[in-house]
Picture: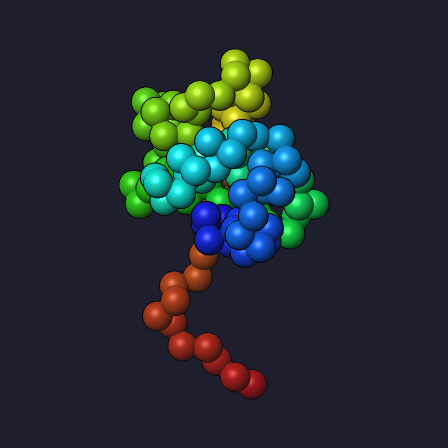
Length: 117
């Protein structure tokens, strides 16, 4: 999710957003300055909005297509508690397993023509 989506959901009221999410207004202001919401905070927001806003891990992993532990810790876990870090790391492990399974699935060549009967 983007900062703009968050603000639209809360009608650009940072006080309401911070109260509902359970984070400080200063944290939300930092997201505005950095133009990104940490993944761990996105998870909290997704829970607070009952799924109306969805957490998006693409900003955590960037365009590299792989998870590098130093990158994840520096970008996603900044200022998070050990319990939250542990939860996020376990979610990342599950995602890595799913990615590996998907890579092993046979996919048809997209350049093949679809034959109609």
